[in-house]
Length: 460
Image (cartoon, rainbow, N blue to C red; front, side):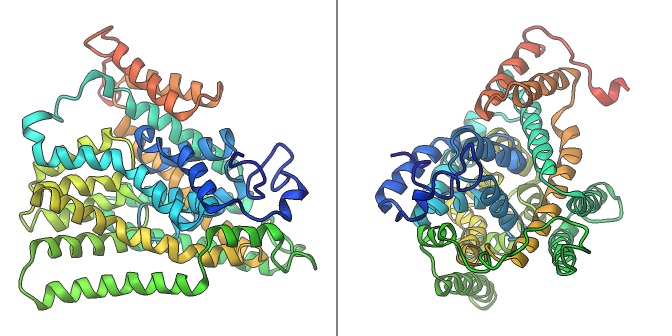
């Protein structure tokens, strides 16, 4: 039996939950079966997930919603918005939460491990032996097309998410997009201001949709799920979701308490005791991971301002490691493994990795029991819709700000257009889009055909 059979959380050709009424009265499959099914879908994603958080969302959506029908579009979108509203790596939190909806917290942990492991290993070894084996300043030609291909996936994902918004949601997303672009391009604003502005935009979007929903169906601008006498109580599908996740409200509060204890305790420890390098590393990365809204791009200036003044790493080492991290699959937060390894070898790598990922990892498990129990409520759906609208605006802003950083030459533009066509018109899956990006980038490079090598902005 596959993950898509007897599972009311999985969509079918007839729509949400229409896998059969029989499934509504069925109990979940045995936990070991659900874990195996989850593992079969997630084990290799860490090897093919190139392109950063937004591209990761596109990969996960194609893989879990479109191709394998592992999870319904509505559930996927809600979990995406939930992760955007929490500090930490949003794409990694999406991996954890989608896996947990089928196989519980154990599946979430397993999916997290496979998602991060390939990049963690490479970046840990690179941080320890970079100058002996790798020269990031001269990347091999097969890496040249990854950036443009990843951007094609980002644009595809953005378009898909925008299509799911109504006019009111689009308005919220447009404002969030414009503000995010302003922060990225304004000479008088620090990039770190996004730590305050991004969560403010997310909360504002949620509040606006809640207020608009409260006006009622005749006066509201947006389109909302309207409760009926039957929908005020959780359905069998909702109860099945709660049972499959397997986390109680008490456990949710316990995870929140663990996060607070680790955050406050680590800060107090390093300020009240003699210096311990590994503990200092953990405190810095855990504190940064607790403040980051917006994912891997936002974390970079914070890490640089924390690490370089301490003498743990030089500016040159920081950007060399960043070049390797950007060419690796998996989450950008794996960059912590490189930075920690440069500071204190493999123990430092593991400590930095746990510290930076820790807050987001803990908080997504803290929120899942609340989300699964309240998602059937109409007002809660309106709040999630507002979070999602603001999050989509931030993704579109990422398209604008990341495009010139990934597409430098006319050859890159050719790769972007061709791989974008493969992804959107011919529905190629993300791993094959990345493969063709690598192949085309190598073919167009100066070492092979030597075409389109003029830089876009220089030529203009």
